[in-house]
Amino acid sequence: MRTRAEADVVVCGGGTAGAIAAIAAARTGARTLLVDQYGRVGGMASTGMSFLGVSDAGGRRALGGIGAEMFERLQTLGAAFADRPDKQVGSVTVADPLALQHVLLTMLVEAGVRFLLHTVCADALVEERRVRGLVLANKAGIELLPARAIVDATGDGDVAARAGARFVLGRGRDGVMQPATRIFRVAGVDIETMFAYLRAHPEEMDLPERWDGSGYTAEDLRTTSVVMDAFPSLVARSRAAGELTVPRDRIGVETGPVPGVVTINATRVHGVDGTDPDAVSRAEIETQRQMFEVFWFLRRRVPGFERAWLLDSAYQLGVRETRHILGGYTLTLDDVLSGRDFPDTVARGAYPVDLHDVHAGAEVLGTTVGGGGVTLRRIERAYGIPFRCLVPAEIDGVVVAGRAISASHEAAGSVRGQAVCMATGHAAGTIAALSCREGVAPRRVDIAAVHHALTEQRAVLFYEPGGPASPQGAASLGSPTAL
Ligand SMILES: Cc1cc2nc3c(=O)[nH]c(=O)nc-3n(C[C@H](O)[C@H](O)[C@H](O)COP(=O)(O)OP(=O)(O)OC[C@H]3O[C@@H](n4cnc5c(N)ncnc54)[C@H](O)[C@@H]3O)c2cc1C
Image 1: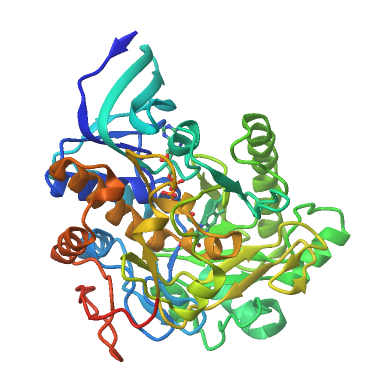
Image 2: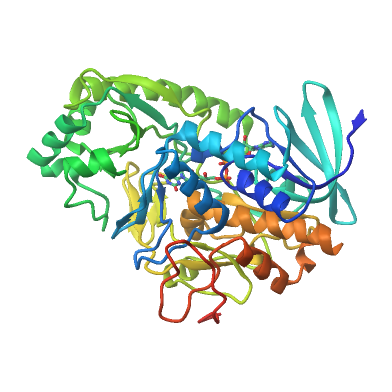
């Protein structure tokens, strides 16, 4: 079995959080290696979905730093729309997914990150409850990779879980998780015709609770990103005709910067455990079937889609929720909705609490749901995410980033948002690099040093009392307002 040379920081997973974490670690001076099971970066954020909650409903910017720099570069290339304020979801920002991958790769290479792709992190090398490296599986067989610090950005907390960290699956009490969905894109859509239909049939924009989608114009749909849950009557009619079996009441449609191309969020499989390979295999097959079913529904039933074609599918099934790795603190729904600050805040979040019905008859935030819908709660003031949520409670040597950080099922409905994952990725990469520089375990890194490094890199940490953060996302280290 081959043993590779030791790296300072190994980032496991080059997705939404991991790509940003690797850039942050390398810019903070660590020899950084990025490992991913695929030959690409960007993860779920590179499938064409809009970034919601880059700013909160009060207009305060939550994502600064490396994530904000990525958007600035994309806008310079003409491959992203500027943030559009939205009362319900804070803001909507969207980029061409291929350009997003290109910009992330460019930033990784510029930062000096090395890559080990088509490689699965299969296990953790643990000594006395400290992760010392990874067991990798790739075309060369099984390899050992020693590392001084690891960022677990696998989305599922694979490394932390293999190392023995405690975690909660989904809702914890019954292990039920949010449903899985395959995202896909459709080209050749006549946006004007689709919009004319929606304007003539306002009931078809029957948006989720408190989702303020009113007031859009066809121009908005063409020149900014608009996220809609639409066409409930057409869905009902199609279901009654036996054409549509997908358990969704509406079709999620997102416009973007590529003319005539929309992203579709409509397939759904309940009860999938994304850490169970057999369950994931079944859901991959089912969502590939559903993708064509929804596509034919759009072509047959929805004005504007008559001459559309299927452009591409996400590189894999989209898993919204699996493990929440238990850290020194678990973020709660109240923390998220009240915009709480913490003395050890290392990132901010403003993605709405976004809970897809886990199953028919389930109770979601006090309401019994039908199984085909989504429950949303807006974030009035972006909340802080403490350092303690990124470090597993009993295991050293690993920092968690992305959707697997320590949060309750409801709070994770917000933490999982792409902008929030980028912010926790920025923090995790910086903490891992500082742990190498200071020669201490990640949990022992001085919080003042973390705040200093993140501030230098324009991350948003705290807001000045009463005032919004600057639109550029510059950090300010004012006093936290609450614990
Ligand atoms: C269907 C769906 C719709 C969504 N809609 C939106 C939306 O509209 N707006 C929004 O902001 N957010 C949305 N989200 C949430 C958001 O996209 C994700 O929660 C977020 O991108 C997850 O980021 P991550 O870095 O934690 O994981 P990912 O982006 O999934 O990255 C994980 C990376 O780790 C790699 N990896 C995993 N395991 C291993 C391993 N063992 N070894 C090696 N590599 C590994 C993967 O290949 C991948 O590159 C949606 C999510 C889903 C699933």
